[in-house]
Length: 432
Image (cartoon, rainbow, N blue to C red; front, side):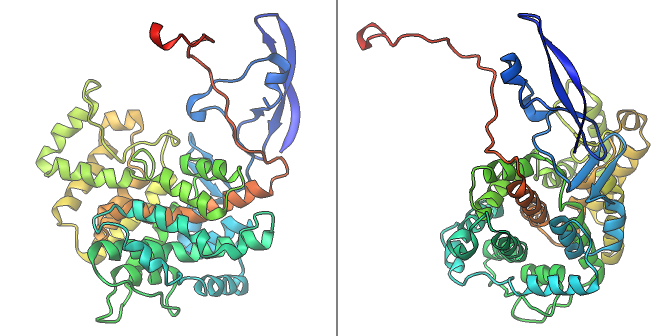
């Protein structure tokens, strides 16, 4: 981050002029440093949703929504998803560089050693109803981890932060799988050290004690790609929540739990689940035209879920990769004739060819394809967001660690534009 030039602002009330520094990153727009704005002018900025506000500086992830670019530590997401495994990408996000073969093997072994959870955590699940949403269970279980692993909660210690990161990265898949098993009434499956990170999660979620689990490499690679594509996405709502919680000095498990709770929102992590609900509502290929027309009608509240993106104004770079994965999975499982998948593929074709969608740049996004892939993998829709959280955990940890390490780190405290009553006196009870 460099300081280059400044911008002069004028207070319209008293015509006082003052300079605000302009900061430049390595790529992307320059920013006006407004940290002294209130001191210099007596005013704050007003920016609901933080549309034009940089809440921090970060060297982890870069997005250019206009050009459809997503970089993890400078590496294009397309190259990472095609050439790397999830733990390679996880190491990159946590440490800033891709590991060599020896370092990667050591990292994998370290993760493997921490995949089991404390046996007493099994009792926590019994406190939830069997039909509880997996995200509700996840919030409770991940939040409870600090009660079991309090030997490394000194956030000022890099060693403690690194150990907590390893533990969360290793244990969250185990917890996600346990959430699913609990809802089905099937026994929990222990991790197996001989399996890879993604294979292990699949056997814990889909395996049973009755027979050995045989991972399908096409399906394993599909889930691995989903995790890579969802590993980080800059200062999104859940990541910002993790940072805000962490700014108070809260322990890392509490901070990640805050991120999980935020991700649960339908406008954030629930988008791919919403895609499946939309497809089920449409129901049949013959009804697509009706729903397309409804989507075009500005007076109709219906919206096509999984199309367009708040950040990407051109195309979502993750969507192309997920589209390829989607077709690989459908081919592998012979599901192209499945009613719901046929409906999804026809909706995709229309959206890519229709002049209205092209003009509005409403291309299928990563959520459209990931929901279809997860359903094909046999994952129920209420588990979609939990798997999203599993992939995003490493991004949350990386941002939390970066924030704790920052020399200018302060507790988050947004300002407000107050619109309530001015000061007034409390009347006596009898005269109210």
